[in-house]
Length: 104
Image 1 (tube, rainbow, N blue to C red):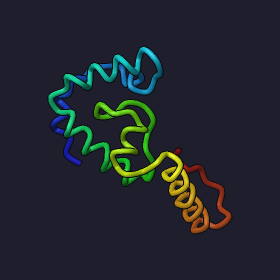
Image 2: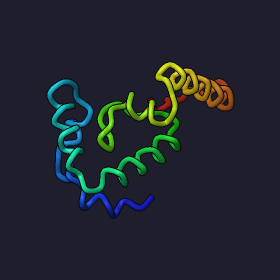
Image 3: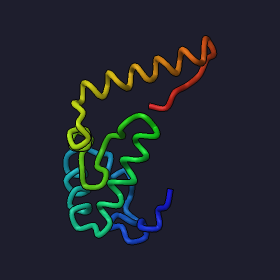
Image 4: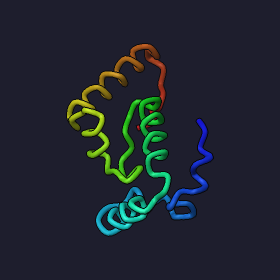
């Protein structure tokens, strides 16, 4: 995935934890994103990444909270969690009884 656009991101050099916090840090993260010249590119990249991984990360991404990303993509939070659980169940069934850790 090409991420050359990242060099122009308003968040470049910012502590990534800022985008996964709550309260004040969330507000600050949203303000940083609001002035980002590559917000659309980040949003599209994040959408592709989340589709490949099969889950939506928490926090601010591309100027949107997780719930906003779900809504924009036509998901309710509950529907997405149900789809995710079904996917994990299918993966576990394919793995059989082998012990493994799934990323969540």
